[in-house]
Amino acid sequence: MRSLALLLLTAAPAFAEGPLTVEQFSEHVTGRTIWFSENGHLAGGEEYLPNKQVRWVNSAGECMTGYYDQLDDMICFHYDQKPNEPQCWTIFIEPEGLRHVFLNDPNMAVQLEIPDVDDPLLCLGPEVGV
Image (cartoon, rainbow, N blue to C red; front, side, top):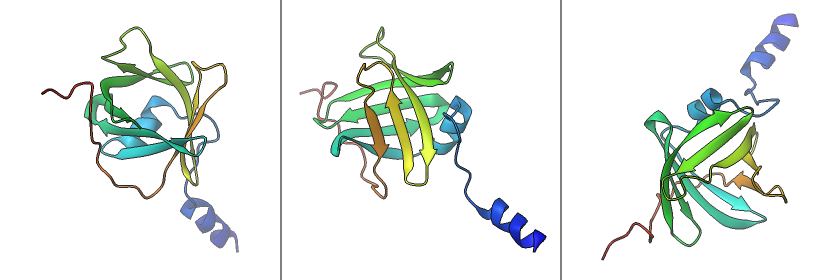
């Protein structure tokens, strides 16, 4: 009986009890493209590249590139197009996927991972030339 309980505990997926560290987050997202919703609507998607590099596209198709790092218990995204405006979140992994709580917004916006979406990012601007 004891070994069955131990097996069940070790076989269960590990979910963070608190915010993810940058190492945990990077391990979970690198090589993936993840789409997010906010208040039931598409917020955008982010492609997580090696070396903590990212490419974000919002719901209007506008892309930004940058990187992420850790500040206290937050993951902060620094986009080339907004160099003085880091976007800082506390990020949790839950059974349904990632949950991001935006700390730059007094209303504490929350973005949720949209599961089972494999669509690539499609940038319509502002970096798209003529």
